[in-house]
Image (cartoon, rainbow, N blue to C red):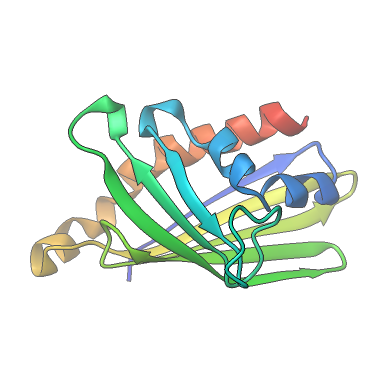
Length: 159
């Protein structure tokens, strides 16, 4: 199964990085403008609209319109795991409806002195069966610009 990973060290404390990544507002702030992201709806694990913190069980309905071209595409992600222990924290979202046959995104945060190491790891399967499998190894070409920009935006917001 193809994977993509990016790590960045931030000069910001773990508590700040964790809090920033724990909200739908943080997601909007760190997503590149060219993706055309809109958070259409968020539901907490108890069905509450617009929860303050995205806990395990929270659902996000998002739409994207990359480069402003074509129709808006909708996707739904669920936070399937969220954990904070000492100097580490992580949460994982699974796309349950969207353009990928399978998508699991683990966001990990590690205290590093007075800073934090941010790691994004994505496991995915493209649609179109064998054709998707054939091009999947070069998927990083699509992920790299987006996650490079996401990490840059995170740095701008927190440092």
